[in-house]
Image 1 (cartoon, rainbow, N blue to C red):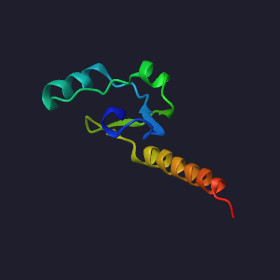
Image 2 (cartoon, one colour; image 1 turned 45 degrees about the vertical axis):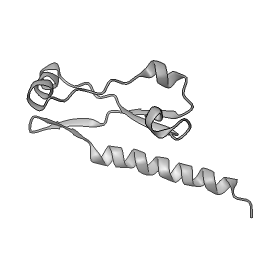
Image 3 (cartoon, rainbow, N blue to C red; image 1 turned 120 degrees about the horizontal axis):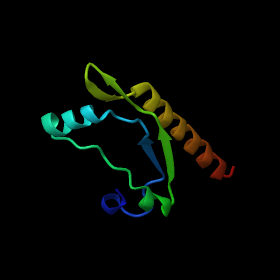
Image 4 (cartoon, rainbow, N blue to C red; image 1 turned 60 degrees about the vertical axis):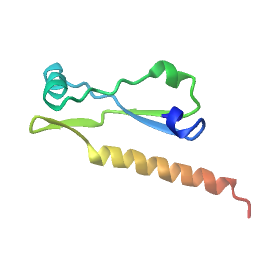
Length: 92
């Protein structure tokens, strides 16, 4: 992503650790022509951003969905923590 956005523009990356059944992956590859995004841990190991991992996917009616409550909770928590960090930098 940094190759598109520029170095130093990312401070956090959210990664789902959910194991997806092989038959569901094959369905998505053939019917939807979509592939699972592979996490490049080797590249991220040297990066200066935080990697947040959580079980974020669920299957509903034979489809893969993000668990929106879990994902939004992580995003909200990150925003609140970053806001607190920024407030600490402000001198009054």
